[in-house]
Length: 173
Length: 355
Image (cartoon, rainbow over all chains, first blue to last red; front, side, top):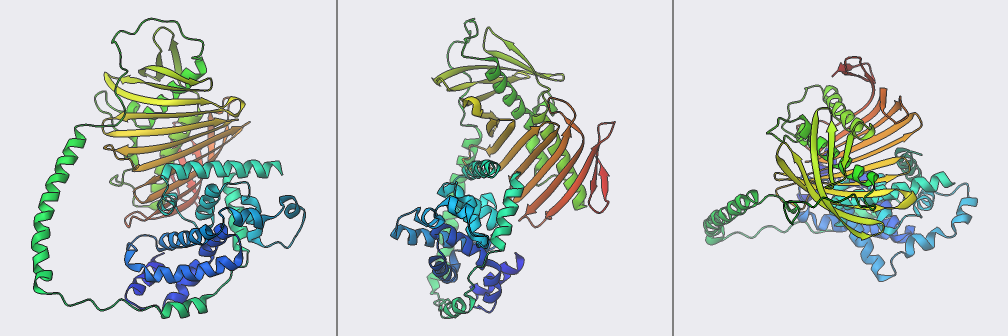
């Protein structure tokens, strides 16, 4: 994290030479957020690019000393929901997941993220988002509360409920 | 399947997936972003005049801030005080809708809250909060592992409190009065309830400890075979503690939020989960406080049918901190309870400490 914070400070000075390292350290997590909201790799890929550009453009609003990835995640999330507002919400996961039974019966070589999608399918949008942000993006609940604009206690309770749903689903398999 | 297994599975799957890497193209776009324009040279007033004005404004603002802080300290809490109504409560028989298990839940939860707050550890005239145990100003061992062991020692008390059925509840029918005893400590609760529906009722009342009155209020929702949800809030001085409890098929979850001086944002949260299945017990605690996130998961063998904690535990502990003076720690610990009541913590690698 210190290395990333140092690179971000360089960005503030107009020095983008550390960008390749910054991208390598963060792009997977940005993709998880984008893919989780938008549901397809093409839109998620486009959103990723725009996320990084907006991050650099809005650095004056980033508070030094805080987690740069949390700020990046906020930008990614807001951008993806802007994109999603142009089409219906909830299309991404539900349509892309297809028939759950088919997925369960099929494809031994299914991509890892497709399997993540299948596992998270029983969750509602809010639960899914919090699980992705905490489990895949390693964000603390406090950071998730700031990113999503929810109360910390709401994030904790929602995450707990999501985990219980996932536990029950796995035990029923 | 444990929560940690689900989380690990999700991470493993995600890490195995192919993710587009468009670094080159993205970098090209980033390099085209104009750098910050050179700041304009300031005129005389912009260099000196604003400072003079803001100095005055700051003094005025500080005066107002001080006024509001003093005012809030003299008006602690947002929870209503003791029950309205006459000081003499009419004697009445216990209504059939107030089942003993509900009264027990309220009494037990209130007692747990007070235990968490350190009331039972305090002098008669001092309500020292157990929350201060985790205060940043506390002196801890310089060795990170020893510090972790002390954290875990405190967590074990918390886990034991929520796991062991050592509360003695005497239900007094006449006045909705419950006496709870924890060893030699006793306190009394008086409360009244309001039925919202057949499955939900609210309650508000007062806990009395050593002539100190602690107002509380809450709600119980009976989920039938699924279990029960209880919410409660208590106010001690300028501290307010809110708790949500969910009981479901052998699992018991608590979520605590600590507020200070009427703030709507908790300065500390504790999430506790306990599950006992047969002779095996599993508990987890997560604490978030002032930039420090501490997690501890316990596995233990219960040595009695009621799930009381046995003499051997295993814990996975992690402390992540954005506070420079507090190091992050991850540790796996075997814990054994000694005959004299102390615990010996043996970390992976052999380091051990007895507390």
